[in-house]
Length: 291
Image (cartoon, rainbow, N blue to C red):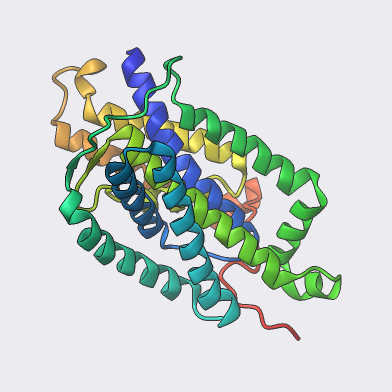
């Protein structure tokens, strides 16, 4: 059972890191549906760099660099060029899907160095994720820069009139989101499952995106949602640990995604938004042109 708990927290950490970066980006008004691609690219680059150099830190550094670069690319199309943010994100995902398959194919197989282990048994990336959740909450709700981020996401015209640099803040948030998504991918290939194969993320980027909406843009609710999904996912891999002999393993594998869909449907209803105050940023997904 302890192994199940640890592996569940590892899954939760990966989802949490990617979703937290997206949450900050959405708070500034920029939507990135290309999280899957960012995670694929970060994980692939980290795997290749680590395999080639035998150095884990270099692998993570490479992932962070490519995450920042892709975040800048999404920012250029969606902020500078004021393009459709959904189209830009989907383009980023498609590009990443193809390029990672091409780049990673020669390295398919297990990582020669094994996987990153924690001496204390507690997944280090989950601890990092919790610390980042606390930092994100404090930043957004207890600091002047956090107020500026939320203002830009709610009413960029008013924020600009108040002297807040809308484009600069959005770029910072989108790049930070790209870095965290790439780090999540690196955590997958260097820690959770150090084996590179085609499309290894398996839709987790889209789950992370869904978790942002599930969280109502609150970092602490996001932590709870990621922890719940991590447990459901890992349980679906080893259901015999809790409910032996009940249903097929393949049915269990669909449950985390099947549960996500009705949750998103419920929280998107007018009743839920009225009762619980869904805090969707008003300017989310809308390009802004300085007047």
